[in-house]
Length: 453
Image (cartoon, rainbow, N blue to C red; front, side, top):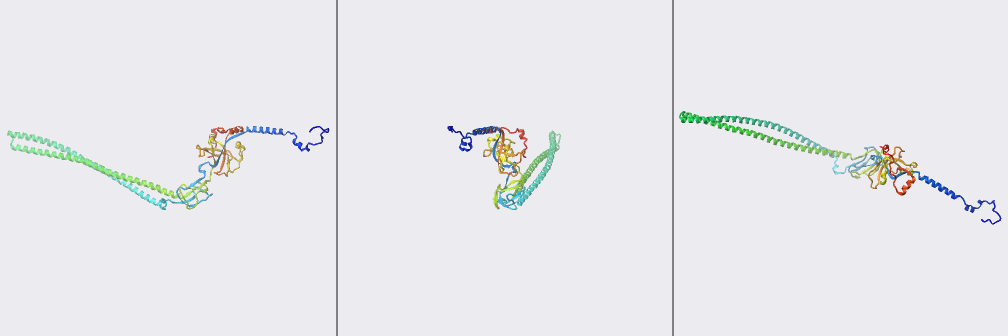
């Protein structure tokens, strides 16, 4: 205001009594704002240099570490009709307990005495095989007897042939002697005839020599005929040996043929016996399949086939059983771009559905409600969604997972990678770069991690 009045401003006037003056009065508020902005900037600058743990965030579900510990379906091994249920959902069953009873529906198995009739067929075939076996033994004895008889016959024929050979030799010598006598008789007759012509000998002496010549000739011819007969006997003996060989060869071949035929029939019978035994055991095993039993101890969780009298096929699931004892694990899925960053034994933080958690993905130490795990398996093939499955087991060095946790629940996994400054992570995310590729632990350290068995 202008100072044109001779009267001055009264000093007893208080500025607090003027509201408009308080509103337009100059203050140091802009200085405080500058200080606040500077403090926030300094805090943010320091905050950018805080360590940040790179991670791969993925979703999964709770499962079991071993395949036999996972919920399994109990299926019908044969086609049949449901006759009776021995359990209900929620029941605990031991291994071998009867779950369901079914009956037969196929025509070839409806005979109640099917096993007994198969047993009768089997006994008949076994008796037939024994008969063929006895026939083979009899033919073996027959073959042995023929072989012995053949030896005897051949020895007899050989002796006869040798006798004929000796007789031929004897008759040959006799023939040579008779031939010599005959030649001598001819010479004596010729000399006697010459002497008769010279008048030295009488006609009686000539006739005696002639008679002697005729007798000697007759003896020579007789011996020659005898030698021919002996040779014929030798030839007949040789022919008889050949006949014996041929005859016994024919008999032995026939006996051998009958023997091999009996052996073939015996083998066919034994083959039928094996088939009948297999068939009988199959019938017995099929009868045992009428009672569906529990493969292991566990809880009946869900009935998939209900009712009495319902017809089912082979492989139809009746119900599912959750094993009593199991080791929990988490099955999670990651993108192919993140697969090179994973390795066996790598640390993972897990948030389970139903368990409250406050998660700071880059600061695992201040997160609340998350649990630790280690990667124990990585699939080599992607699923139909183009993702790779990893299996995570509890970390034995960390706090154990919750006891009420059950397979099938959801989970969110944070696979921990390299520690970097926060500004670097912001820069990486802003530019769309992948996390740093590195091994969290050296290989020898990863191999020494005590994972669940």
